[in-house]
Structure formats: structure tokens, C-alpha cells
Length: 393
Ligand SMILES: Cc1cc2nc3c(=O)[nH]c(=O)nc-3n(C[C@H](O)[C@H](O)[C@H](O)COP(=O)(O)OP(=O)(O)OC[C@H]3O[C@@H](n4cnc5c(N)ncnc54)[C@H](O)[C@@H]3O)c2cc1C
Image 1: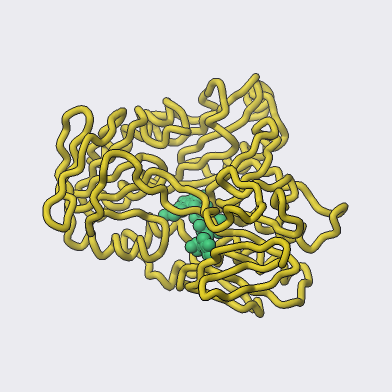
Image 2 (image 1 turned 60 degrees about the horizontal axis):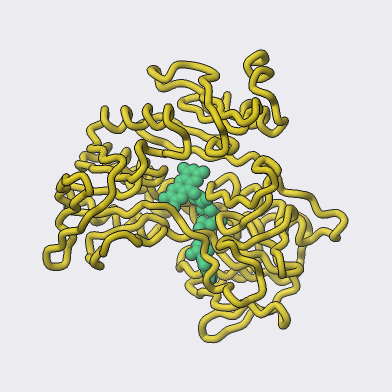
């Protein structure tokens, strides 16, 4: 049984079949859609450049039973069953948990539930936004992380007025101050109103709509539409009391096997795994490449004998598209104690910034440098010292 019918769940299913598993395969998902890709939801789909069908992930001939629109509500490890609403139970010999994450709810000053408040995580969220921006002109986005920034870029591209608000002093703050300054300029140049280092003092509501946002610096932002984009949280609530260790992601060992759950493996946004690139600490990586790579290892290890299991210890990587620029990050920039420009020029918006801890390259952020990022990812994997990287470069 696989719980979570999205990227990691699908890749796990494909891996099981590719490695010769010919038993019964059931994939349970609470969305009504067959697996689809999320990156276009804040980019091409939102811009109206592709249709929902273009976001569908290729399924192959999996011979799986797809149980869609059904949420798993409990896991009984002793009886080896996943319990869904109904109740309906699915027994398993092996289980893969790939329930991903959800948009983090707003927990700041009181936000009245109104029909022009949006989050962006699912295909349905994105389609609801597409519908709303047909008439909304003034958009306020809370959160200048990568979803908030991408959405700002897409909405500017189709002529919306966008105000971007964050408590951090610059957008995409985990990428550091210098990259943050470049992002700030980029948004400002494209006409986004930036409100950084501030938070929300109050929301103003009229009838069934949020009409504006008052910030702690006294600014008043009129709003036709409010997008809350303040991060994501792992979908693990249904596992409370199951015996699995949650932190709040599902804690697993280096083989992706869940702590407390023999023959239970996890992959994707929901998994908390030890990383040697983070001094053995548990990390959760909420990016596309991780969902794909971890699903391969988790499914392979589920089929393997215990002494043949392989360790999952990747150098994380992600990309974001903003104003026609490909922004990429590899490794753990936020763990660095300093950063240094390795290539290019910030002013040209074509560069690679290296992130260093104790002289070792632990992260790199690239603007418009897609080919080079593969090389930098390898250097981080090989634990290269920054002088070495600079010499070879
Ligand atoms: C708008 C957007 C844009 C993105 N763009 C990029 C990008 O440009 N680059 C990048 O690297 N990453 C990007 N990402 C991140 C990337 O899409 C995710 O890392 C990836 O989708 C994770 O895959 P997953 O299968 O682990 O989880 P998810 O895709 O979250 O899927 C989990 C599935 O499990 C379902 N589920 C949850 N709980 C239950 C339950 N109890 N029972 C049954 N089903 C359940 C969920 O509804 C969902 O369908 C983006 C994400 C979003 C939202």
C-alpha cells in the first residue's frame, strides 16, 4: 500500500514495478485527481499558459488500484492495515507513506474566513486562484518564500498589482542576504510593492471579503485578493498515536524506514531523515527532486533484504522560475557561516554564490546558471573545500 497519490507516491509505485514487484499494489490519495505535477501551479498554469491536463504525471502501466478522494485516517501497525474513512481498511505487507505537506495555516492576528483568501498547494487551489484573478487586480501576498515570490512574478506577468509582505528583511531569506538583495531588486524592478521586515497588524473585512491589510509599520494595503504563502507543514496528523515517531515529519532512518514501523518506508515532503550534510541531524526537504530521488530509494529498500538496503543521503536541490530567471539552490545554504561569490556577477543576475561552513562548500545558489549547478552539487557531495572548488573552477 502507498498512501499519498502524488509525485513521491507515484515514483515509489513505478519503482516497485520496475524492480519486479508483481503483487497487489494499492495507492490511496485524498485528492480526486490522478497524480499531477505541482511546479506549474504557481507558474504556467497560473499564467494560463498550460491546462490542468498538461500537469498530469505520466503513469505507465502500473496495474495499481487507485483509491482516490479517500483520506487515510489511521494506521494500525499490529494488524498491518491503513484505515480510511468509511471505515475501509487496506491490509499491507509493505507500506510507503508519501502524504507530502499542506500549506501552513495563518496563525498570526485574526484572519476572518473570507472567500478572497487563498492558499496555493493543490491543483484545485491553483484553479481557484486562476478564476479569482480574472477580476482581482490588487493582490496581497503574505510570505516572500519561493511560492510567494514565484506567484508574485507570475501575477505581475499577467498585469496584477502585487504587494509582497514578509517578516524577513529580504525575499527567499534562507538563501542569504546577498541573494536576498538581488531578489529584492528583481521584484522592485518588475513593479512589486515590497514590505519587508514587517508583519500584519490587522485584516480589514467588508462583507464576505478581505478588503485590506494593515501592517505593523502603519502601511495600509488594499486587497481584492489575499494569498497566504507562509510555508508548508507535513501531513502527519492522521499518524498520531500510530507508534511512528513524528517530529512533525515522519522520522525515518537512513534507509527511509520509519522509526517504530518495520516495513513502513517514507518519501518526499513528509519524510524526516538523517543527513550527513547536516551533521547527521534530521532534515525534511520539500522539493521536487527529493520526492523523486527518495521514492526510488524507499521503494527499492522496501523490496530489499535488510542487509542489502542502501542509504539515502542526498545533496538537496531545487529550482524556482521568477521573471524568466532560473534560480537554483543545492545543498544547505542556510547552514553556512559565510558565503562568497564563485562565478558571475550579481548585477548581471547570472552568478553562483557559494555557501561555506568551516571552509567546506555546503551549498550553492545559482541565477541563470543551470548547467553549472550540476557540477556544484557534485562538489558538495564530494565535500570539497572552497579553495579546491575555486581552483578547479
Ligand atoms: C505551487 C507549488 C510549486 C512548486 N514548485 C516547485 C519548484 O519549482 N521546484 C521544486 O523543487 N519544488 C517545487 N514544489 C515542491 C514540490 O512540488 C513538492 O516537493 C512535491 O510535490 C512533493 O511531493 P510529495 O509526493 O512528497 O508530496 P505532495 O505532492 O504534497 O503529495 C502528497 C499527496 O498526499 C495526499 N495526502 C495527504 N494526506 C493524506 C492522507 N491522510 N490520506 C491520503 N492522501 C493524503 C495529499 O493530498 C497529496 O495529494 C512546488 C510545490 C508547490 C505547491
